[in-house]
Image (cartoon, rainbow, N blue to C red; front, side):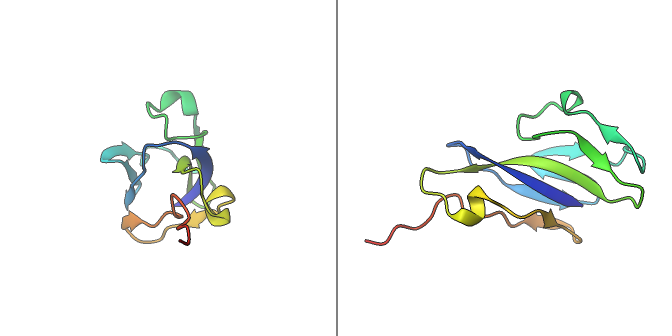
Length: 104
């Protein structure tokens, strides 16, 4: 599974977890196992404002899920310009920091 992060200024935090083709977003499970290779599930068919765009599975079976990642007012560059995350194992997904720690 590949997660494409789309940064968005939000106060609400995000947690992600992978279980096979299921992505758990803040405790709510989204099962994408029904998407066949080479197919796309339109964003409009997914009842979550955390999903940023269409979910697709390429011809090799890799699922790509665009997710909005929230950040604070002092977010670091790695959060504002995140790299895609490739997940090969089930479990919690590490996300970039919500906010940068400010030096006193």
